[in-house]
Amino acid sequence: MTKILVDLGKCQGYANCVVAAPDIFDLGDSGKVDLLEATVADDRLADVREGVRSCPAAALTLEETAS
Amino acid sequence: MAISLDDVRDRYALPSVDRLLSDLDAGETLPAPFYYAPEIHQLEQEKIFSKSWQYACHESAVAKPGDYAVTRAGAIPIIVTHGRDGQLRGFVNVCRHRLHSIAEENGNKPLLQCPYHGWTYGLDGKLKTAPRSQREPNFDCSTISLEPVSVERWDQWIFVNPDPNAAPLATVTADIRSRTDELNEDLRDYEFQIRYEYDMECNWKLWAENAVECYHCPTLHSTSFGKTYHTSPDDYAIDSSDNTIWHAGPIKWLPTNVDPEGLKGFRFAFTFPSSFFALDDYVGFIGSIQPVGPQKSWAFVDMYAKPGADPIVVKEWLDMWDRTLIEDKRATDIQQIGYNSGRVRSGRLLLDSESPLQSFMRTAVTALSS
View (cartoon, chains in turn purple, blue):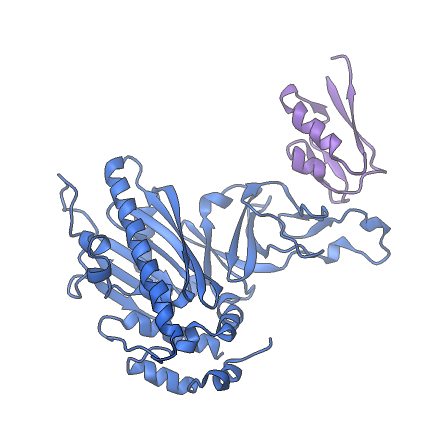
């Protein structure tokens, strides 16, 4: 199972993650990322990885855990 | 605002507005400089296209929350959004940062991120984030949003007006609604087929003037539209007012084995300055003519057909319209040469057959002198 971890201190509100996977990431009123889903379904992994990779502030990481 | 019609008058020896209007009443067209002067092109952007209702998109392009569609109104790029709250809104499609577009194509997103530097707006146009703006001492996202424009539905069509305080489209087009209510109801279930595009080497008004009269149909379109529909003055009805023009004509050439009973013929509705939609017995269309330069214009015509219609007949009808529109383009490109020649100052209308041209030219001059 894959979990998304967010470092709000680093988040700058670029919204590249929202562009990559708008069903997983949103931008809250605070101007920082809002996670719509904390764990990633297999069929969404590719887009989520792209969202994580494309964050210019490196605020997102993925954690593999035993399901 | 740099110039007015008065400023342009001296340069091109134009008569006063009163004189232009009384000449029009007598059947004289607007003088040639209206169709080639760069100053007129500029004035039209400011006085006409910046404050008139123009076709944006079919309602399906913005049917669900997150949908957005991009279009142009004159030189102004526009984006129409369907908000999370279900409301349709329109904005100038220009980022408040360094004026890049927010989007270049239609799509669906919960937020609108400018692809240049990442400034991100809600579907309501409000700036939510500007990356690194926390490092700026005097930057407050909540005070920044996209410039709003007016948006209104006309049945299944979405129209926009760059003026956020524009009079409602329903008011401006009230006189034609009883006819277009029925036309759009008949057209509602039709499915998009193809977009025809035409690049003209002529002023946009020449193409628009061609579109709103059918005096040319029996000759220019003798093997296309003029062969398919009756276009003689006793059969073909035209009706015009300040902002709208209506055409209606019965079918002449029937496909094999078709019973003419119940066929409604060709119906066409034009809204000043540049948008039109129509329905004949097999296909419908919506489109607009747009100025590109003083002597260049571009038109698109989106063709629709009834689901379940005979595909062979639909193809014939679509081809007939493409041929008709190519014939129009050839004619208007050639007219531009005549206008540029400087030797024939204006034209002479046949008021019985070309009354829509009087309306169109009158509305144009009135807008330019406002």
